[in-house]
Image (cartoon, rainbow, N blue to C red; front, side):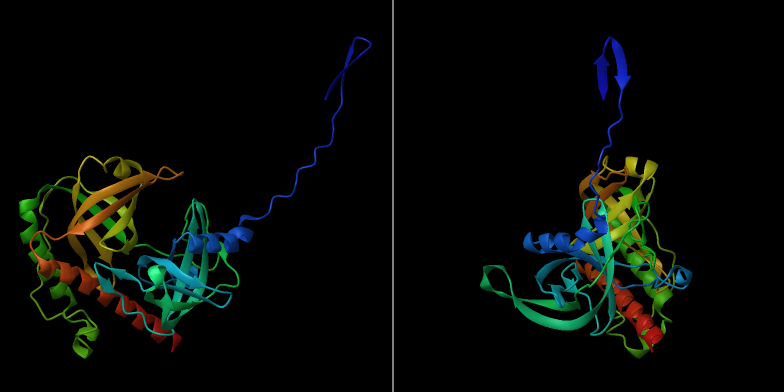
Length: 317
């Protein structure tokens, strides 16, 4: 405050009272309710890293976006995770991790699959969903790694995007990818014990997966799968390379259970840049050579999820 008195400038400091800022973590209940009321979605995944010390033993986590169908203080009912028209086989009692995302704010919490149920959805029709244990508390994710909290960090699968220069070369690359993945997976113990769960894999000669005619690769991470496509996050020069092409050859790495990256053609549908200048690319799978590779990609994703659950049950046991 500035005061003029008798031609003299005098300065006074006045105490400024700043209202207490509530922790953003306290807003998660309101955010979760708003997501439900607006028909929004949670992100759900199978936990791999129960603590930072386990990271060397885990596998990357596939994240699904699922709509909240109903909720109360005890349970959340969400859509059954699916991709490319196929529901993922989640076992009753399996441990899950949910992520609440609102803008740049993310909260994570542990939950458990309580099994399927039927709820009335829009239009007065019944929808089948999964019952999850409702959270009592959550933890806000770190800003620099927005899928990490103090008790757990999720590792996301790597994804490579190659600008596709000649779609006519895709069919041969699809066939080579099927042969490479199946050949590398032929000795998996789950294949011998239960081929249906394993994605209908039969022994095949191991070959090197080849590329169609493509441009330079952009490296990213797989953020989510669902519907008919996937979301990939890219940074730096890799992000700058996205947008000049519409068709991409996409390779998703799912080690150690799927030893060769699963590859397919995808069309870029949209992009947006977040506050950290990372580029999110939404892509939709396309299968120009027919249904065989479409089913192959579904089978490998389902096989991976089955094997991750198998590992989790073994640790629990």
